[in-house]
Amino acid sequence: MTTTKTARELAETYFTAWEEGDFEALRGLLAEDVDFVGALGTASGVEEALAGLKGLGQILEKIDVKVRVTEGDEAITWFDLHTSVAPPTPTANWMHVEDGKVTRIRVTFDPRGLLAGFERQN
Image 1 (tube, rainbow, N blue to C red):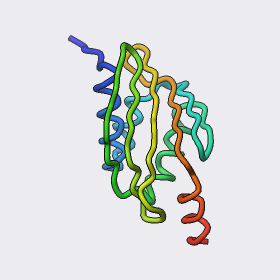
Image 2 (spheres, rainbow, N blue to C red; image 1 turned 30 degrees about the horizontal axis):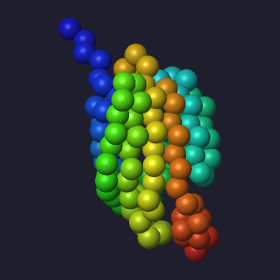
Image 3 (cartoon, rainbow, N blue to C red; image 1 turned 120 degrees about the horizontal axis):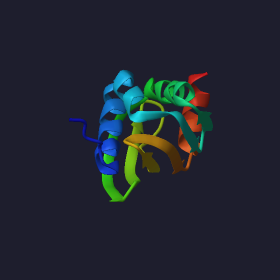
Image 4 (cartoon, rainbow, N blue to C red; image 1 turned 30 degrees about the vertical axis):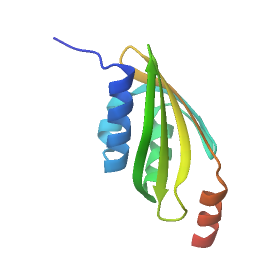
């Protein structure tokens, strides 16, 4: 018997896998045609989305989830993004789920701290 994960379960698994650097688990959560739009860029398809997650994953230290709200196929996660290059960044992530896969992701945050951190690294 196959059970389809709810939007809440997918969001929880997504953030846990990303924080742990488990990109194979992440791949299994994302639809092949996943569409991502965020403050630092966009991605079309699972390979581009994973590349973006891996890139930010290189500086990711911790994801401190403050609250997760779900309704039907939608999940919004509010969290502090802790990285090695910037102070914690308050972040909102919205996901849409279809057929047990994440199909759309929208992320918003003030990117100035991260951008300054990237600048200091170069």
